[in-house]
Length: 265
Image 1 (cartoon, rainbow, N blue to C red):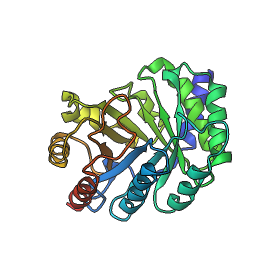
Image 2: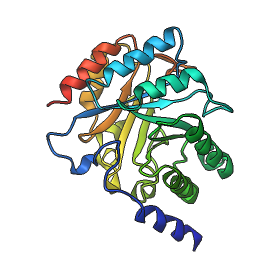
Image 3: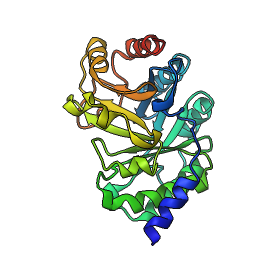
């Protein structure tokens, strides 16, 4: 009984659209072809600060969401440099605080504590990026509770979940998030050409994160093959292991121009 209660509350509190954009399955031809989500896992000082400024400039050209991640989460105290970039970007991009979920095995109280710290440390965040989401249906109650808590603490919160692959469709049906990362990696799995897996149920928005892509031309080729609906989120970089997200791609400006140009078609 508790499972169905959790799902009912989640569904009943869901807005028709969030700050991450209207649902792509129902969007018009005038909506953007692509939206950009940046895992900004680089510290906002020195070279990293230059990357943050480039991200801020990109917000003038493409719809933009940015994952903020000081310490695989909010850390134990606010960081002045992160507070500064959050203040500078909060009106130009959707800023999301990184929260690890341990594939449904992390203690729910720890997840709630991370959410509370994000809101206390970094005013201006619009939502959360739930990393390490389980793809298994049995963990749905955990993620429904987490989503309910996040939306209660931050009304209208934008939620992005990252299973990084295909996942039980019940997550999208019950909208435990607004955006789901359906692939994270350096390959091109065949299911990315299949609308069954790329057009998510319940009006949820797909996201794809590619790393190890050597050039803007290769990025364009990948985007040309994938069967994502209008309004989907993407990110492409030439970075690689162990942390492909610790800098922007060397072809960042070309990537932004590509998405801006393609987004008008």
